[in-house]
Image (tube, rainbow, N blue to C red; front, side, top):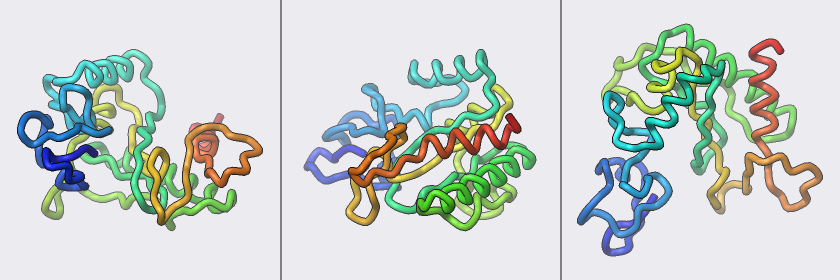
Amino acid sequence: MGTQPDGTDYVWPSVKRYHPMRGAVVGTLGAYFNDAGVNLMHDEWFQPMAEETRGFLRLAREEAPDFIVSLHSHESSPSVEPTACIPRTVKETIRAFADRLYARYRVAGLPAREAGPAVQEDGAAFPPPSFNLASALHHTYGGTAFIHESTAGARYKSAPEVTHETNPGSTNGTVRRAPVIRDRATCTLGT
């Protein structure tokens, strides 16, 4: 997530206090940001600052996939995160996908939550959820876009190392999630 000028690590959620992350508040940028200090998850959606964001939106518009899953890392059980500011029917699709994905995780012996994100109206509680990259992608192409969080890409003492790579026969203790996610997406689409 980067460091402050004195070398102190930024932590969530305070790392999101400055955007773009530039100037006197920055020691090192870390993985949240591109080289210009823009967090692509929280760009300016009406006129994106980052070329990468413009590229994501352009690709989504051109390809119009059924699902876009943005893979992120955190230090708790894997989760499909709710996407804000989208129609209820799409929220229901995300919940159904997550429920099936978690069931598949349990069958595979992987840690899993009990249920997908609750389907609820945005802004009923304060602070309201943020309109982020997943929200913007949905409104750009009309499909289902959401965030999948796991410990992949980060090392935590409290959780096993996780990869999103196909790694058959691995004996190094890594947990592989991407094949399970692809399997559930295919089943959700009925193909």
